[in-house]
Length: 318
Image (tube, rainbow, N blue to C red; front, side):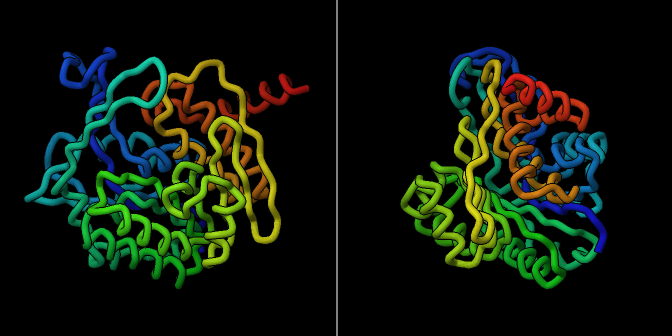
């Protein structure tokens, strides 16, 4: 089996407001690319690892830009499919000086929403060591849900390490019950689950990391890493449990993408043979770096930038 990560999701065109205010009143936007799985892919590739992205795009300017950005970041796009009938999704994101920015999606009926099990058939999972999936793609349609289900099955049969981030998007689901049941069923089939405490409240009825860990481990997950915001993460790795502290940040500029950066740090750490504790610490560091940068993935570090940040944090703690 070759070392490498495969992901599946919906990258979108991202229009970022150039000034604060209601989205309806903003007069200028900057163009970028968004998507939780896309952010993870950028983070993993920027740290020097092989990563491939399965998606479906429309034959339009957003789709063309996404392919160009994937290529520029060294992300494999051999499984990026094209739809002649459907368009690439896009979204608007506001600018704020504190808290989470307002977001508005234009993704209903997008090309990615037509991903289906037959689109998974051509993938040779044995050429990868890890697969990362989230709860966003299965939220789109019945066909994307079936595609994700098949990816879990094929990845398990090929012996890949499966990581799963719930990444809740309630507005994409028909109702909360369907969201909760589907997400929890998928999480139970993963090796590594990456929920946040607020997601735990919705999915398992508790925001306590110990309760969240118990829930998913009892259902089959090997490792549960609960993200606890600025305080770090709580790790339940088999029978071992511990807390990994977060990193101090100079200023929180944009919280979007922090969890994706965290996932990229954990996955690359494990792919490099780090212990789970050290991999989670790397994830916490990248999450801290990301919140100090504008945009969804612009702050994701190179190896040198990550090493410098972690060394400076270590020297400050001494």
